[in-house]
Amino acid sequence: MAVIHKTTLTPTKVELLTSWLPTRPWYRGSGAPELERTGGFRLDDPAGEVGIEFMVVTDRSTPEPTAYLAPLTYRGAPLAGAEDALIGTTEHGVLGKRWVYDGCHDPVLTTELLALIGGTAPAVAQSVTDTPDHEVTRSHTGEPLPSAPHTPAPVDDADGTGLPAPHDTVLRVHRVLRPVPGTEMPGCPEGAVGHVATGWPGPDGTRLRAVFMELRAA
Image (tube, rainbow, N blue to C red; front, top):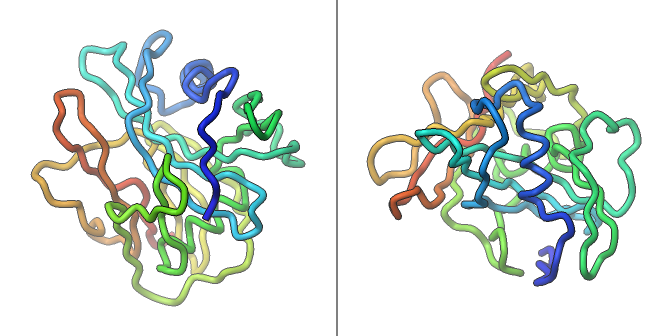
């Protein structure tokens, strides 16, 4: 599993997202957000080159706090052809300069996300090395998902991001997280053939839960 370094980032991930989120079509605010990192999980890159994180940030600038999902990748060099997906660069206290991308445009993230949905890659803890994240749940029905690198062209809209996926499906990434009532982790949404769900701390100390991604027929 990837090593999580306890070090500094300049600027921080939250600072990068504070500038980037208002440029996105799914942003719900009317001005600059007031972001707090409130949860998420990671996936491992089998090659050990790319950091993969699904970060939840909560914007407290609006009357009702809004939780956003930011799939991020961290690279030691620019990703060719992904200039429009670059969120920014940061100086890592151990690894040096890192290029931070909207992970929906990064084939390493999309490939490993499909592997998670298909049950062949585990979710790992966001901030602890060598620790599975057992709160993350997933499901998949239908044909096995291929393990070859997946390089879709993402489509962003007001509700999130859609990525063409194998077997004539679409992987829908929910950028604005909508918590479900109750204390149970949500299952696969009706009509979907796969999903990922997990939880994060709410503003009043409760545990919020939502579907983060779902796989549907195109």
